[in-house]
Amino acid sequence: MRFKSVLSVVGVHHSRNDVEVAKRLCQEVDAHLSVLVVSVASPPPIGEYAAIISEDWLYDRRSEMTTLRERVAEIRETLSDGSVSFDVDGIYPEAVSTSHSVAQRARFADLVILGPAFATDDALRTNVLDGALFEATRPVLIVPENGRATLKPKSIMVAWAPGLEAARAIRESIELLYDANEVHITMVDPDASSREVGGEPGTDVATYLARHGVKVELDRLPNAGRSVSDILNQHATDVAADLVVMGAYGHSRLRERLFGGVTRSMIEEPQTPIMLAR
Image (tube, rainbow, N blue to C red; front, top):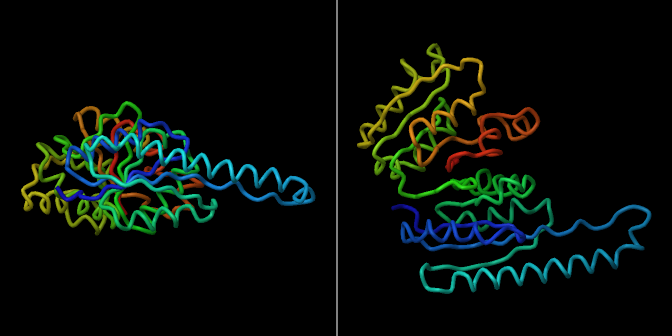
């Protein structure tokens, strides 16, 4: 398998389960596990009373750094049974530099894993995705609560739409697709008149994958008045997908944050493990 170095990013207050998930996935493919524990620094006080409360702020920051060191030590102890090659580090960035700090570590990983705790940590999830996807251009695996993630999926659904993001997701996951028993290239209300598709929607990517020996099925689904994310989630369930592969943020990040988008809808309430690439 191509995943030989995996980065698991966890918040300082996230449960141990996120690390256990990453550990199990690395054991599955004999990969090295790097755990990055993130504690975002409390912002400095501003305004009229800044001087008065600065001592409290300094105390909070010292306490946060102590908690971070303790969490790093705890995770090292958890992983010290010898079942996986690992390293653990902690970072204490300001909020504005969190994504950059994550990106510096993600550049040297084949895959970034975000565990179930990120489902309820919107701010940190956004920064980690920005750093991994946009600055480091590394694929990200999002594992939902109660989602049985695997790096040896037998059934994969690819959420396909013509564009660079989806094409990159295909390339990043090509070995997973090749090893799967079935791969569903799934399109919702594809536009047959678009010049990008080169004929019947989805046939170009299906042909490309078939040449790589991938067992492809092409599924074109009607909208039927439902959201695209609802349709994709339901279809992933219908085909018993172990993994959803999709390109991330076809529109600008600002536009998706303000108005929503398929990526945002899929990652806010993931129902199946999702691999994102951009």
